[in-house]
Image (cartoon, rainbow, N blue to C red; front, side, top):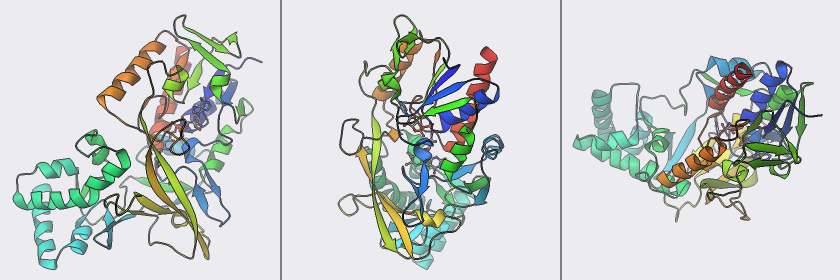
Length: 390
Ligand SMILES: Cc1cc2nc3c(=O)[nH]c(=O)nc-3n(C[C@H](O)[C@H](O)[C@H](O)COP(=O)(O)OP(=O)(O)OC[C@H]3O[C@@H](n4cnc5c(N)ncnc54)[C@H](O)[C@@H]3O)c2cc1C
């Protein structure tokens, strides 16, 4: 039977859209190349009884009631506030860098002075992007800004992105501001919580619908063919005129005709340890690559509601240049925004202008960093627009 809609990818973008369309009677076929649903938010209980996040730690935080209400149809939640420490000068200090971090790293007298200056310039409970702090003319703030830049951002950014903080989009470093406060939570959003039985269970419930069929282990491009010149889409060699919602890589969709879009990839060295490994879920290692070739270590059980006691699972995270054919670094994680990559992406979108039934949605297809809540909101919005159009 011909589906009403084909969705490529069973991550947030694909699953949320599939569910909304299925709820109003559309027969949806989801093609997913991996052997599991959930996209990069996939999690599962490992041999240590730890809820492991296969593609890096995922923490749900948002100010969007719309996203919470939508997802709450498919899961209950438990409260979880994420805390990150940075290993700086052999001490563990709060990240984002805050007033407590200053106290831990400077003498009492110096710390009191620096805090006073910061509060008088920016006010208490404010967030200041590091690049903005560095632009301040006050010599004391400059000195502090240089210290924070050197110890928190400089090498970390280089390791994570392969570019210096000045070279990449300022939005990237602005994601981790300096906090003029004692709030040591990584996020300050209104809702901070985790799905009671994990993200994967939430996705299972979302897709449990008579109008949704999921084909796992299915590379969509083995079944779909796009002919941009004639504005046509073929599914298993038959012309397909219903909507195709594509949440995968746009360069792959168009056979890499404009070249590969650059991504940053990651590799996780997963290890079993006894007891407890570190005091919080994530410890960052912002020192130079020669000292710490990895960026952070995550201890997954620290975000679990009922964690196992005697064993623990940690993941040491190493950034890589993405190479789709490589033995390592072959998962595209973060788009790398440069003028060149933005132009390349626009050229791909232009090619698709002539194919009205293909829609690009999600972090890969839109070549954009989305948090989980943001892609839920975007998928809800997209689905309603699609339904209005019909
Ligand atoms: C390391 C890391 C940590 C993160 N942590 C957080 C966090 O703490 N909090 C937060 O809110 N967000 C976090 N995010 C962001 C979160 O992962 C994204 O918001 C979310 O994955 C976006 O969903 P998506 O559906 O767009 O993409 P994905 O989750 O990537 O889903 C796309 C799916 O499409 C499939 N697919 C692609 N191409 C094809 C094809 N050709 N054929 C078949 N299937 C295909 C893929 O296999 C994948 O399953 C993190 C991201 C990363 C990289």
